[in-house]
Length: 150
Ligand code: HEC
Image (cartoon, rainbow, N blue to C red; front, side, top):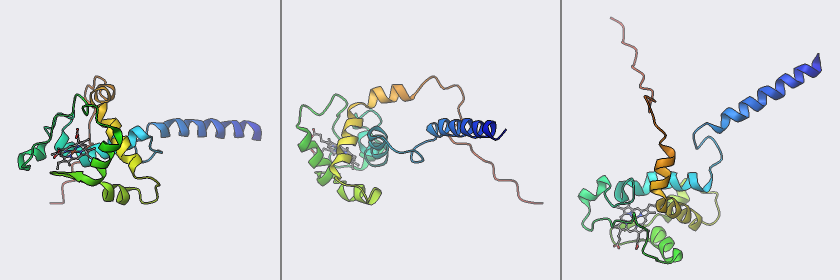
């Protein structure tokens, strides 16, 4: 009796664990790819654009337009790119402090620059992979505020 109860609990826990995998970041432990994506969407998308073409909405207000990097970084050494992301260059701000603010307890902040650069290099693949045919999946359940009395 109690043995089957234990079995029940174990199965229940397993089901919980499985469903937890489907929960969106940041409720699960982020992988490097998760982190790269999160950082890109938060800090880079506005200028570099969805596919890295340099066509993000913020470009309308930039003096120097964002370059098209959708074909890669022209063979620039990773270290140099990491430094650009950390310290900024020209119109592009540096992100060292933002990374620190996001994950204060972490070690080498350059790892974040690497994650986001890696994400940036695979925007097209990741976009395709992340976008299975979506019929009518509500992006955000828009809850109509209940009509107030009267
Ligand atoms: C305000 C707009 C803006 C934002 C935000 C921005 N960038 Fe940039 N980025 C630029 C511009 C403009 C350049 C060209 C800089 C220059 O050479 O003067 C650039 C250049 C780069 C380069 C250099 C490519 C090369 O070959 O030299 C990399 C890599 C890059 N950005 C990555 C990122 C990443 C990663 C983020 C987010 C963490 C980011 N950028 C956020 C505007 C932006």
